[in-house]
Image (cartoon, rainbow, N blue to C red; front, side, top):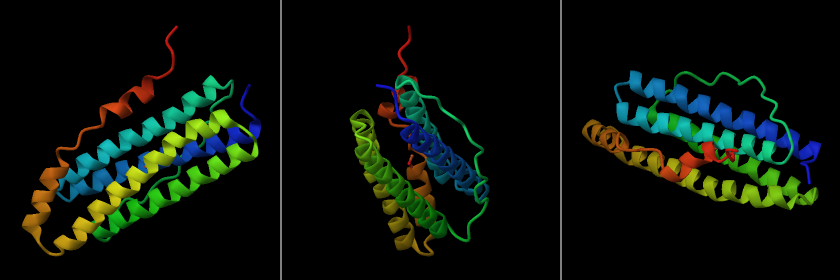
Length: 178
Ligand code: FEO
C-alpha cells in the first residue's frame, strides 16, 4: 500500500529536521576545531554523518513506499556558543526536540493505521534514547570538569577516538540494488 500524503508530508518535514541536525553538528564541529579541541570536533563530524544517515533512512523509506522525497531549504544553524557546556546543553535540547518529533510521527502513523511506518519508526524511537543518553553523558562530564583544563584535554583525546558505528553505515546503502 502506497504511503498516504499526510504521512509523506510529515516524513519530508522530518528529513529536513534531520538535515538541520546534521548542519547544526557540523557547525559545532567547526567551532570546536577552532577552539583547538579536535576530539570534540571529531565527535561532531561523526554526529553530522549519523544525522545525514538518519535523513537517508527516511528518504529510502519514502521511495520504498511509493512516495517522493521533497527536499526543502535547510535553516542555517548557530555558529558559536558561549561555552562548551552551553554547546552540549544545546545538543541535549535539540535531541529532546527530535525525540518529540519522532513520537509525533508514531502517533500519526497509528492515527492513519500505517503500521509499516509505525514499525519503521521504532528504530528511531530506540535511536533517540541513545542519542539523548550520549549527549547527556558528555554534558555531565563537562559539568564535572569545571575549570580543569588538563581534564578537558584528556576528554578531548577520548572523543577523538569516536568512529561511526558500523551498524549505522548500511542505512545509507539499504536501497536494494537491482
Ligand atoms: Fe537524527 Fe540526533 O537524531
